[in-house]
Length: 177
View 1 (cartoon, helix red, strand yellow):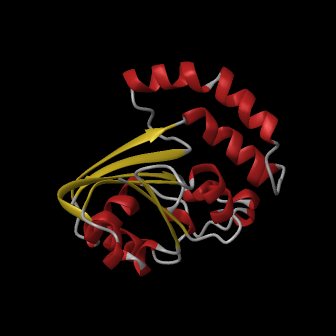
View 2 (tube, helix red, strand yellow):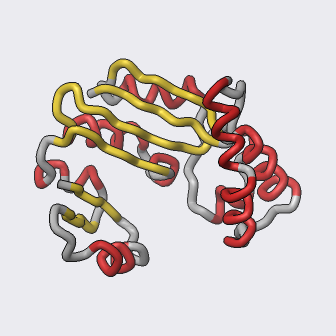
């Protein structure tokens, strides 16, 4: 079973339209913390660009820990480097960006163990800094994102799979409940 949790009133109808009625897919409109009792013990939880939108990241991670079966895994992808926090972060309603230390601390406080962290998208950090701190953009044109994803991401992923960059636009975390 795939359980999709979406709190945003503007995103939930789109989610329902795209995936509603599919066998084995259940959608929950609300916050994970409010629906822990309704969600069965999960093998895995995936949260991509979620944690930075939560006022209390440890509360979210505690809820994630509670819905995971013992030994289950949380895969979390978050923006990195608080120093590049800028206009885009404000516009996208981010509360924070992370370092490996702050993310590991949040996972540990929430009860997770064996937290593995990896910096990703080193070049994206430069673009984010320029867009949000230098140019003070409030949005990113979707065609630019698609171009970056098509031309840069494939070779960057291959390079970063061989050698982890010392810093990245994001951090990928995998932790055990």
